[in-house]
Image 1: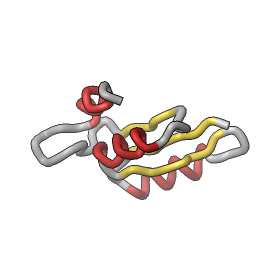
Image 2: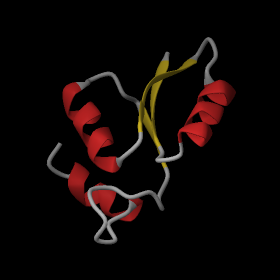
Image 3: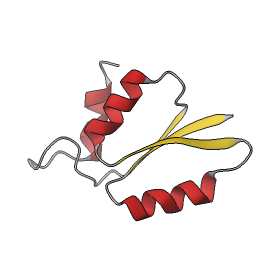
Length: 77
């Protein structure tokens, strides 16, 4: 079983992705609507295999951070 975290600020797109990829071999284990929330989920979970990340969503604040800066925040994990 492959466990997927979806990180997207548009809940409609996140739910659409979840409906498209959930099957016997792939399971969406969580949905995060901000990058900060995604990082918190990753830190608390050891069963996430794949992260589907909207690169243009806001990550931490309104200062222009986006999905491209997510990798920097993930380095300490």
